[in-house]
Image (cartoon, rainbow, N blue to C red; front, side):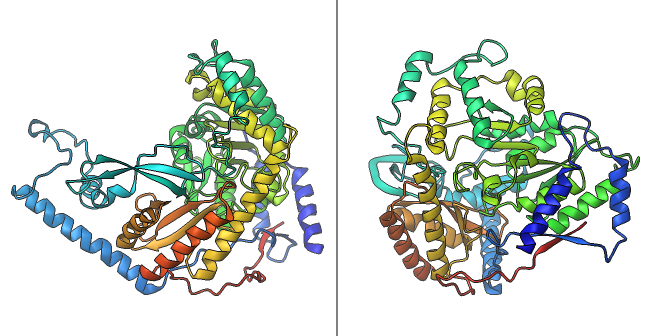
Length: 557
């Protein structure tokens, strides 16, 4: 109780000093600078504890030393063979199937980076059959795959005409199961397509602004508990095209080291200064905030026009959940702004599917820019930006995605409306809340069983993104092929999407997965874990959760 009271008091005190709009000139306050620098010297001053035991996060488990050694050794061996095969191609003993510079362009700036081209033709090409598999059915809890084979070591593929039926789909982001073809559920989508057609063929600033777009934006704002929202036809562009409208030269972006590529691209396009802090490490973030406020911009030492903290709700490759209460406390303390990408968390976490703000019980108003996509929990396409009305109005005229991109397809907008109303219970049923609860149940069950088996997995107990660490390149390939043989579709991920020594299989849980499906997947995982020696964890888990020995994070007041 004392801890909860301290958290509430800290939030109330910080709210009294909060700022307003992101499209204004931002935090220039020299008063903040003086107060922060002064507080640095108060070693024995009062401290505010910010912690949440209910949603604690475990540090990522490290692999045993021999696993790391064998992983690097494996990459070293295939790299040596790669150089040997390049030598054979150079002397004409082996045919080169990869793209090459034309002889008359040898003196030009190369189109293909040497290492990237080497990696693609000698490492990735050997295992390319594990990616880009053609799907020929609905990506629901089970799906059908078209079988393909290669006669030239994965340089080209040919279809055999055979279909792999009813493979369990453990890779799609269909968190709530709304990627479905139920005729009763999709009736409104079909009617909408008859009324509006498939495409708008215009931007919303011209003649592409339909009533269904405005209805969707009102519903999104209501769902998130904010003043206003704006929708876009592409999730990736929601980040990459809107961040440059919010910050620019003279601004500072503090970005988590594991942020998605769309956030990184948007930050680079903005022209703002970018500094990267350690993943979910509040001490690293506070150190950068303190330095930014005290020192200002390089050379001139003028205050930054804006300081923007960029994070994700759930990190898509690690499955870890953002430490939102602590970040909000820091952003209030240092008068920064907060941008939260909820692509994988909106609809997927929280008692009623409203994302990480609901999961941690924080006020959505404390997040300056709320971003999310409709491509995952809602079974559709596109994304949104939500927050204060002034922020959204500013973006309507300054965002490249809003001004130049075609408006969202009407049937897609209707699908989002249908799914969101279902989650909110506005369709007159409890189907939506049942799916949210089923997803949470499936997630905890699947994660607990994997831990008991001895796999190293990343992420939080609430996260439906479940990475299993495989490490060694040979085992990644064998794992993906063996799972497909057992009619289970999985996504395996390696360098450069992950660090070189942390290749993994990423499982995405869905509310549409039955317990029988999960048990079947777990049975085969247990077998493969033994046969391929993938159970590297040295931690002991049981069905009874223990207390966290992780120290609480403390903030200087």
